[in-house]
Amino acid sequence: MSVNSLTPLTDTLSEHETPEGIRLELRLAGPIVRACAWSIDMLIRVILYGLVAAVFAFWGGIGTSLMLILFFLIEWFYPLLFELYNGASPGKKAMGLRVIHDNGTPITFASSFIRNLLRTADFLPFLYATGLLSMLMNRKFQRLGDLAAGTVVIYHDNKPERIQLPEVERRRPPVDLSVDEQRELIRFAERCPQLSRDRQIELATLLGSVTAKRGVAAVEELLGYAAWLTRGDR
Image 1: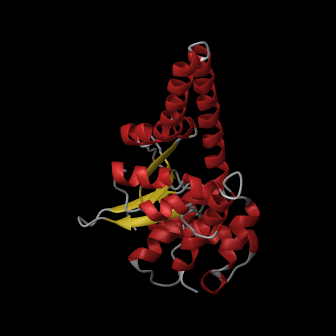
Image 2: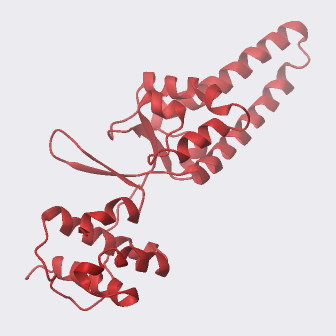
Image 3: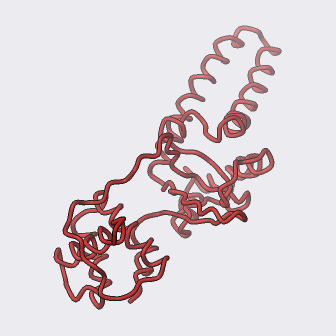
C-alpha cells in the first residue's frame, strides 16, 4: 500500500495548487465548530433585535415598519457585510474560522450573497437539518449554500508555527519514496501529536507492508522514517 493512502485519513486538509505552483493546504471546519460559531452570531442578532425593538416599540405604526425593515437588514446583511470585510462573522472569528472560495481565494460579494441567500434552503425542514446533512455527505463540509457559491469554511491560523516532529530514532525507509510520498509521511509525523494513540496505530497499520511492523512499533517506525527524511545531512 502506498504512503499516499494516508492522505485522506489523517485529517481534514484540502489541498489546492495555484497557477504559480504554490500548494495551499486548507484546514476545513466541521459541523460542530460551525454550529458554535452560528450560536454566537445568533446571540448577537437576538441582542440587536432586542435593542431595535426597544427603540422603535413606542413609535406606533411608523416604528413598527422601521423595526421590521431593520430586522430584515440584520438577518440578511449581518453575515454578508462581515464576510466581505474579513471573511468571518463575529461568531466565526471567535471560533477561529473564515469563509473563502474552495480554491483558496478570498470570498467575493457574489459568493457571499449566494451562500447566505441559500441559508433558507439549508434551514429546512428545521434547525439547518438539510445543511447538516449536506455537510456530512461531502468531505469539504459544504452546506448547500457553500456548494452553490463554491465556498468552504476553514480554520484561520493567524500565526503559523514551525511544527516540531516527535523525537524518535531516525530510520532510513526500506524503499525509495516519491516526493509526494515523502511529503505525506512527514505530514503524518506532524499530525501524530494531535491524533489519539489508537488512531496513530490504525493509520500506521495501513503501511504494514512497508514497515513490517504492527501496533505502536509501526507508528515509531514511520516516525523514524519521517525524522530521517527531514534530516539535513542524509
